[in-house]
Length: 104
Image 1: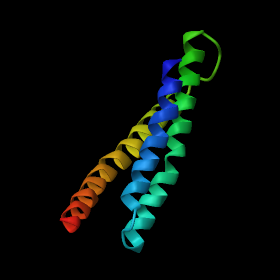
Image 2 (image 1 turned 90 degrees about the vertical axis):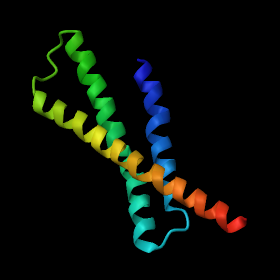
Image 3 (image 1 turned 180 degrees about the horizontal axis):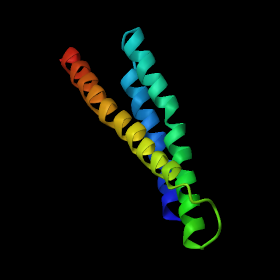
C-alpha cells in the first residue's frame, strides 16, 4: 500500500517539473512540456491499475489473466513518466543556469 502514497507525490512532481521546464520557453517547446505535464495522469492511472491487478492476483481472485495488458501498462507507465522526467530535468537545469548567468 505504500506505493499509493508514492504515486500521490511522484506523478504530480513530474508534472510540476514539466511545467517548470515549460516556463517562459517559446511556443512549441512550451506546449510540448505543458502536454507532457498533462499526460502524467496516464502513468498514474496505469500504476493504480497495476497495483489493483497485483493485489487481485495475490489474493487468488479471478481478475483476468490478460498479462499483455498488464505488461503494456507497466511499460507505458515507465516510458511516459521516465521520459518526461529525463526530458524535463535538463530543461529546468539549463533554464536555471541561463537565468543565473543573466543576473550576474
